[in-house]
Image 1: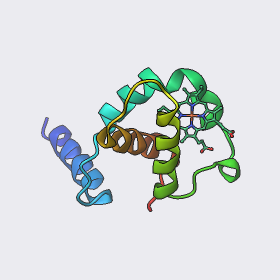
Image 2: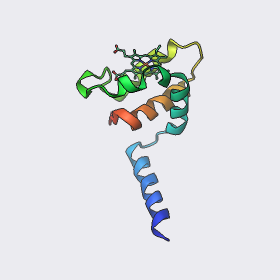
Image 3: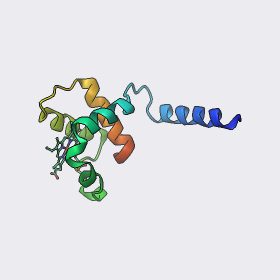
Image 4: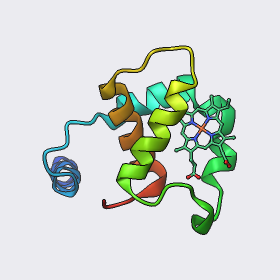
Length: 97
Ligand code: HEC
């Protein structure tokens, strides 16, 4: 079948277009999040009404991620934080800026 590779290529192009120049790796972010953060609050935090989110922009999402990461014993690199923010944005917040 020829349609399938085309559809995948289109999806890759679309996600690249949505984030020009982004180097974040959402799959890696997901792994980090599930290992270090998810056990605590995924369900509750992600079922909240949008009006109750503490996060309203990509900048504030990064701040929240960094704030929570700083409370864990494990050191996180800036790249880790970017990847986690990217994953949360794609899976949940869907913020443009
Ligand atoms: C000890 C438990 C715990 C851990 C570990 C934890 N969190 Fe949280 N997190 C919470 C709680 C509780 C809230 C909600 C705080 C509130 O309602 O004021 C929250 C809120 C958040 C929010 C804001 C949600 C919103 O939109 O309102 C983000 C983003 C977040 N956490 C990211 C992370 C990340 C990233 C990590 C891992 C680096 C992490 N958290 C680890 C308990 C935790």
